[in-house]
Image: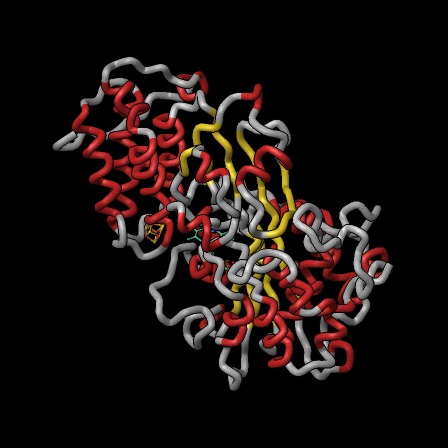
Length: 453
Ligand SMILES: Cc1cc2nc3c(=O)[nH]c(=O)nc-3n(C[C@H](O)[C@H](O)[C@H](O)COP(=O)(O)O)c2cc1C
Ligand code: SF4
């Protein structure tokens, strides 16, 4: 079946809408020939019949928003690249390091040409001479497989000189990171690609501007899932994409569901699906029919939401999740049942951020250290009521004072669990540490003695 024809799974409706993971049921779709037989590279072929600006207009009209976290409109981002720039680049963010996020990996393993095609369409739209796919260090085998797929596309004339006779030439390279969460942040990613220390840059200039991008040239940084939507949009048009989702959050999204659910996994659904539908209909409900205590919407980085009826009935869109006090982010939905100790959960997350803080700015570097220290004291049952307020205060001190969003992410586990689950903290300070077994097995946290501890 050609890509121009509607895919059997491509029904207009809330239940089934597969654009990103649509062909994974086709045996060997990862192979170049099979991909092409099933309509692969038709989007690129169509794109080069248009001008680069016309391609940008199609993506703008689709309303596609970035799937890496911030939800920035993709076509608008592409339009920021100066038209007179001589050298431009595309950097594909395949760092996928957010806890509970595992969608980009499935896309790249299952249907890698769909990403390569999407990245090439982006490159054509901004007249880029090279695409760099930045993969997290643990994606070692996946990245080598991707190299082989890139060679297949090159052999067919989709990569290299004068692509499809358009006069535009472009190379595609992969690059392996070294396992740092911060290298998923776009400016740290660019530094890392350049062989510099993987730390965020001061902005402006932003990546799309001269001085802010890769090798200081204007660059589009897009997430894997974002670009994987683009071939379908090119073939089927912006209006077809907009039949899914909401006005402000059009299209489909891959929701990564993990935690206390019966069927964890990736679920591609229209934006606007509610938490209730995602957790109970698609992910099979909570393990052992327990109640829902809380839900993380964007891995560890967004504020946890309580498992209330209001939250369960909230549509998963950028605008609606924000209204209930969190953000959709990469839509890595971690479900926590009624027995979860939120002090334990907060400590685990804060410990992650302390470890991953790059140390460039003081509020994040020192704040994550102090939050972990106070939280572990509370968790051990050695704290007072005042320590809960101290923890809240340290989190508040970090807010708005950091160079990159990791600092903001890091304060959320403490601040949001105190806001929604203060009783869990109160139980700890009254000296009844009902520690989770996993945490008990960890070595005690050795902290240097400091004044005021
Ligand atoms: C600490 C941190 C880690 C991030 N990690 C990732 C990541 O692993 N993958 C990703 O696509 N975006 C990540 N982002 C978001 C990127 O900075 C950037 O917004 C994104 O790649 C833009 O692509 P998009 O517009 O397609 O979403 C991270 C941001 C921060 C602050
Ligand atoms: S907020 Fe944290 S991770 Fe971001 S630059 Fe500052 S120290 Fe580094």
